[in-house]
Length: 73
Image 1 (cartoon, rainbow, N blue to C red):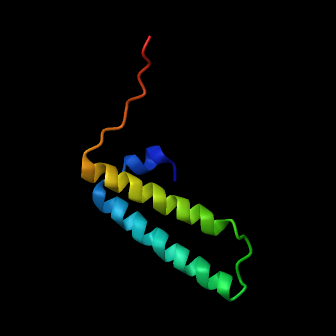
Image 2 (cartoon, rainbow, N blue to C red):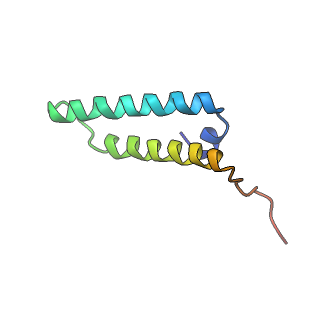
């Protein structure tokens, strides 16, 4: 999920996505431990997704406004 897509979600959806990402990470770790995980790059991908979600949730808690995409001449 891209950052723009994550920012478009409301707070409840963010929390739901975060819970799903944590569950996916848990499943990947179990598959790794049982040697059933084929692509090991999935674990860091999910970890980065969790970090993105937590960052955006924290930004909203602090009221940090992201700069717009307007160009300054």
